[in-house]
Image (cartoon, rainbow, N blue to C red; front, side, top):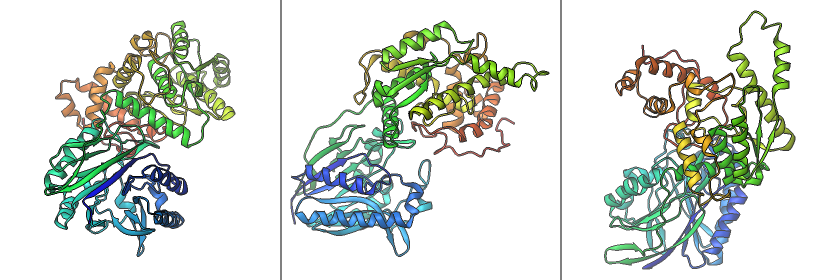
Length: 552
């Protein structure tokens, strides 16, 4: 039995499905932790998280078992033992679990007991719940290893304490949400420490996986609730922690305590991280996007430059006869400030061609929104042509306010591969634009200084699809609209409840109707970074055909 342990925390990114690559990276980081007795990796680090239905493929589970055995064999060299998360097929059932690899073998395996089945998680559909886990024995020390949700709820940690655990190591795949980093430390895992009287290590991954992004923000709490370590957010990081056993149990020596980003810096970093990993992991040389001279496309270009570098961002201005000179000037100035390429491709010839093509069919009809949507779809076709020809992924630039009420053209400005501001309301877009002009993100690859012209931030938003068009012609002003939408979407309030907050009833009824009607559009929208608790797609799953209205 030892009275000292050196435990390395490997806060890493991972690539879903890249079993050999993930295993190789773990061995690389293990080689850096030469003084460690044990190195710990995030939940399902071997297979990537979340692998969703990929884990149901028999060949995938079999390959994971082979790679885990290779990792176990590597520990025969006398170096650090490893705590590795993976999937385990046991008597026909599939488990989310963690393995202690030591001395050249798989020394212990524990399965996740509490399976989350809400919001972004649906683990009950694909995994069997393991039994209440027992501590693992390592160098004579009984270590409890609650896996993610096992640590978010009380029963597993209390059981581990009753079964003699001396310290808790919780491996996680905990996605970013606004305010979640502080809640993990100050509320959830601080409660586990108070309940058990045990010190606790919380280890989380970093990086983007489709719509989810992981912020890291790992930490160690001693038994008195004080933080001994706080790892950085948004960065891979190896942290050595030093533990000693005293009369009062195990204690971790104090180490660096990173300051985690406040709002809206954390929102911006989430967008940068999600876009960077999506583009790079999927092998795109860069991104292309329509630059309108408006705030949404401007901030998307800035995010892309910070994620990938300005040289991998290609902006295209696609003016119509309704595009103002001010918008042309603003777009050119914004691209210059960001440092990215911008081209101009007028769409007038294509608009005239469509007018001529449809003149017979439309001869007895007045001009309406149809002609506006044709312009948007021409832009979408043009940008997709550039994407096809040169390989750049097309970014869409619609914010959550617009996507909520369908203020976007399907197969037009919704056409593309990814949307960094999909879960950001319009007022959030304004906030992060002003923040980015005053700060360069720590993880950013873009230029120092302002990157968006002030006129873009202050001018009234417009789609410029008809003369003198303003967003406010069709929608309530964004400060009002966003508050309504937050109540209807994030809080699931009824019309009566929203009206009770001081909003006009007819307006709320109309916005709720638009929210439901736009579901079919959102089902066909590209993925984008999840920021809040109720993003469209993973969290909020409504039927497309839906007759319910709370306002009647």
